[in-house]
Image (cartoon, rainbow, N blue to C red; front, side, top):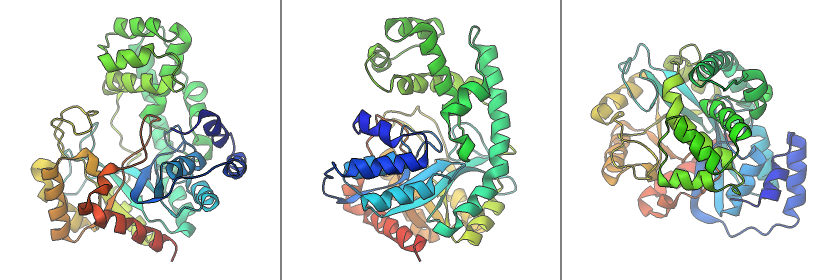
Length: 384
């Protein structure tokens, strides 16, 4: 994690302030050498949910030795221009894209669970390698879908208030100010839980009172979670708390997304029109979680061949995956199917917490050289 004082400067209220502050910070910064294996094409920013503005994300990635980085935000690409400007100041080539949930209605995956823990029939996909003059096209395309998500978010806030007596959250006053919605940023369930976390801290404080409150709310804390709640000096205390609240309450208040999810055919057409890569995001069944942060759950592994048949039928030509998140057996099967179906392979591991490193250690394995090569292909494609 970067120095808090620097992070605060790079998270200033406006894009202009953030970039100006970066220029000043760079005068006193010595970066470590770039490591050619360190790439990460899936970094979230404040334009969805993250402790990092686009400017701060670039700086943090470079401080960890990444040789390139990529911005990916939910339902939004509005942070991309700032990301590009910050990268130019830092002297690091980058790639831009975004993430969205896509309705699989009318396809062979209609009504089946793929890579979405919350909802069947809806798949997460990324748009990668977006030509820089097409950013505004994506912004306009997703504007009505963002509006639909706001409506669903408001309904979930009502469910939170009904579920938790003594808690009153206001979407306009408590949630939206935590987001970049005013600049077409996405607003996710994490924002709702972050607002709840802030409200709880204001009510009961940190440390043992918070542990007691969560226990009274019926949440069984692990030893790790208890230690986090007792660490009152941690500057991102509410981030740890929102993780606990998300696991406990999102399943209870979640409302299926409908109008905010574009159909797959429309997404395929959009990406052809802007000359970007539409990527299915492979998740894979979770048994004993490789990273220790996911509960056991089945996703698309039982019918992975059907997934690839669907992608081929519908015109999707790329797959993105996270090597650290899967077993060797899953990765070998997935990569074999990508080769069989001629799928372009892209990688990146989502960053949305201050406790995460930007480095993907798996990239040190020579078997993933193709993912490093793909990153440079994305960068070249964007800049043609």
